[in-house]
Image (tube, rainbow, N blue to C red; front, side, top):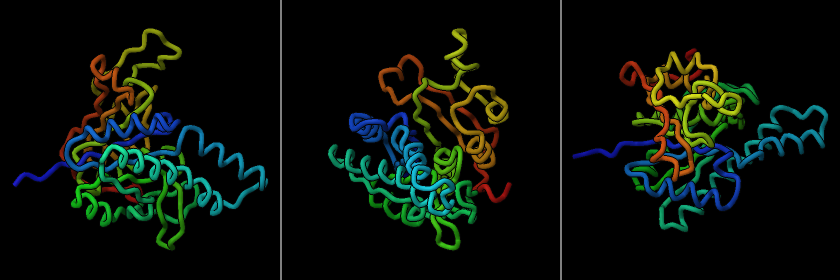
Length: 256
């Protein structure tokens, strides 16, 4: 009997700026075959807005309370996307980082992932639901909400993919793929079709945080960087970051 493969799809804040953006993302997800886990960032500049609000209240906000506050952004995105999928007749459920089983160290604002226990995700996948996970966040072993710092949502996506033995992680960005140099500064920048992990980790210009690339490398997990603008896929289908070995993991950040 054929077992459906699992794909993890990651959508950043640029792809989730407006209500119309959620409709576009829902269409991309609805067209995907097999089991699907979606990791989302906060809408647009939501995290910066929440940080700004905190600093209007307190000159030095406690790090624990900042984590409680800014983790709201991803929760907004996950629930709105579940609603957008429901409108299209796609069964979906949203889960926070803690509900998804992302276990971290106790360091607020810059936590490392120690383990992933995706029991609820696996249950909902068997129910043929799209599972939408709030990126950038987890829960410590002391049951405190934590955030993962820079590159956190990308790292969430790779860690979940490793735990689920997913086929790949797809990163949907506001660029067509990975360029040789910054296309905003260099009109001769070249789109790369493929990169090795070593190349990606040493690349001058990159749209995925090195932290998540390192984790993908440890787990031999293929990454696909492409645009969320569907009309551009025929022109350029995105950049693949290919592993040199079969999946070994799961390894998480605490094993660095």
